[in-house]
Amino acid sequence: MKRVVVGLSGGVDSSVTAYLLKEQGYEVIGMFMKNWHDDSVTISNECPWLDDSNDAMIVAQQLGIPFQAIDLSKEYKERIVDYMFGEYQRGRTPNPDILCNREIKFDVFLDAAMKLGADYVATGHYCRKGEIQRDGKTIYQLLAGKDPNKDQSYFLCQLKQAQLSKALFPIGELLKPEVRAIAKKAGLTTADKKDSQGLCFVGKVHLPDFLQQRLEPKKGKVIEVPGNSPAFINGFDADDLSNLTKPYELNPQLGEEVGDHKGAHYYTIGQRRGLNIGGYEKPLFVIGTDTDLNVIYTGSGDDHPGLYRKGLFVPQSDEHWIREDLKLKIGDSKNYQARIRYRQPLESCTLHKKEEGLYIIFDRSQRGVTPGQFVAWYENEELIGSGVIN
Image: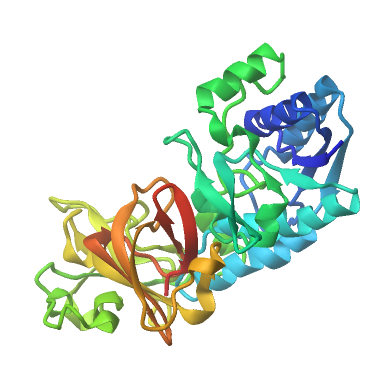
């Protein structure tokens, strides 16, 4: 009998994951990851890990499977929280959920499961795993979940073949209402529990408060840049990949000061809330930040050209191919579809591989291309690779 360790989070998705695997004849062990007890960073009262841990334990009892909690807070702090602070300090916006999957669930947690003699680990992600044979070798595919409203393949875009080979995603073939119906029929205590929000395995945080624990507030200027500024006039060759993917060159002389802020590292491109500047016919959006000068650049209206870019660049060191056999060689180009954030509909694009990295040019300009975030490219429903946006 194959042994599977399920990451029981205390939610309905992982509960049904464990239930289905038991029904399929696996020997199932439930394991709860405790990723937080660092008092140096304040978290709002909505930090439900204790309740989640209890719910996970109750589900394990209902299913009659062994259960244990594992404390990964040291690794979580070093690999996720410290990285987050470092990125925000540089004026970049990280994605902790993608990092949590790469660094915690499918690394430290996976190692712990293997020490228990597990053949696989399973999570309640809405995605699927495929297998194909090439030259006598098994290649694992990461496929979108069947539920178009819940597909979470993007969050797993940094997984490697070795990690995928040990992963199971039993609810990837189901729609969310079907998952809840299974939980109800099985009498699981989590059947009607709301989906969790916030940081992976930490709970809700108010980001400015969270960041202020390490990144000191620092008053700076808010500059409004008009839409007809020279920064947005595309006077270069459409074949010039470097120019097509560069962030706009913004400086305080391009616009006028319209307010102040508490620290450029608290803001991200495309952000609308938190500026607290009124009196405009159209809302102001963040179109750029400069943490060296401590300046935020804004533009008026959702159609402001500063919110849009034709392409993006992924440095060579930040390129990641789940399908290593499809990795582009220098000089190659290929059409894919890509997204730059979770839930964004896939957008047609062309990948151009150069010595310095990967240039991704979209058929349509993209809103809110944000350094530090992840771009993931797909062929139909298969996630092929990903990278950190420069």
